[in-house]
Image (cartoon, rainbow, N blue to C red; front, top):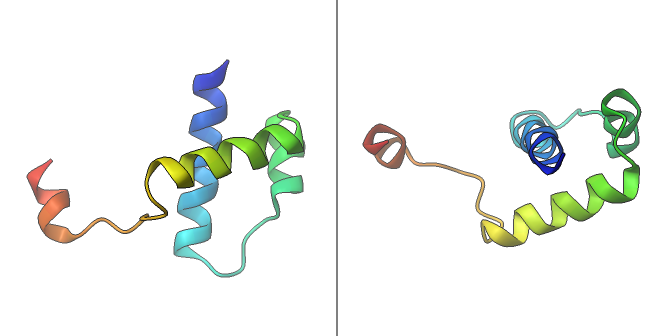
Length: 64
């Protein structure tokens, strides 16, 4: 379901944030069995939802 798609996209975003040499969304699509257009759409929606801010400060992290 949608939870799985979101989980995969979160893994993609974490991977892209932490490493400049990452797999393509096409590869993620093949290994997750989620259509490429769905990955791209969910990735866009996720980034818009967080205001393109992927970094979490140490202060914010510790507050959790």
